[in-house]
Length: 403
Image (cartoon, rainbow, N blue to C red; front, side, top):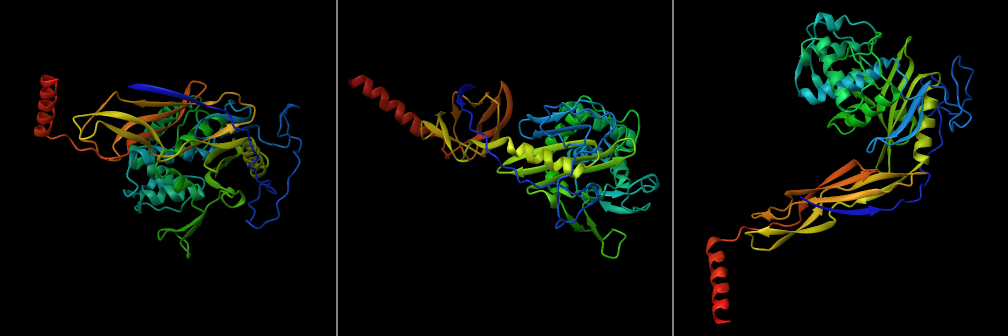
């Protein structure tokens, strides 16, 4: 492969934040008057005088750019803590990657009897897997997580092992799952940073964003006269661009929230663990995050970036274009620019069809790959016919003979 590199300078960061904060932990309506609350006295919580978010009440917190994994703010993000129902993000990821959403799940007696928050499932219910995943993320149904685990892995233990393995594969190595719901267990733990990594990875999984951003939906199997579920994640209403992801609470974990928002092509993920005012904290984190970034379009869809020789084609070369746009954040105070690397073969053999993937555009930051896009042929080139090739060769021979 041939590698071409160009360097993209830093853009000046701009404020993209919308200054709204939540009134309290109680679930406010979308039209509720929202005001900022000062941080109360929290036993054992130390906040550095240099912390830019003094009113944050979470013991662990982080806001991160999902595409690059770059940390914009953090407080004790590597401390081991209980995740409560934020666990269900990984339940969703493993299910999406290992099963078909159109599978029909038969609810067992064990699943129906699971303690805690519920979708009111009953033994023998037969429900589409995709519906269970949506309901699980909307109202945190523990019974659904067990039905899903049993359907995919045969047991909760086996499914939890898959969850832990997947977490470690994506870099969340300080995480251990022993169940699919988030019910308390001393061996079921994670960190704010790991949850941010899991959520960021989730946004790259087909079906994840669509599932975690559902506000309200009707399901005929819901045992309620209206057959309707409403998402418990109020950030979908409270925050402009809010598009996920999961609430959580147990006595051991405290109030937890992983939230996501997208603006101007930038997807941020915020995590608060053991928080007094989790809505306030999450909004403050996302506001701060968007205030620190400015979108930088590093690749435009359709942009011609190179020309590659074609062997045995009716044309000698083919132009190559970028298949998808790439927008990444410039972050205030970051002096390291992005590096754009174009990887293409030395030549392509005909025939070539317009849209064929012929290479890859890689964006790097500080030497690490943070994004990529396919490079595709901008036109079709037919294979040169055998007789035409012979004719051209013969003409070249004659020209050389009479020269």
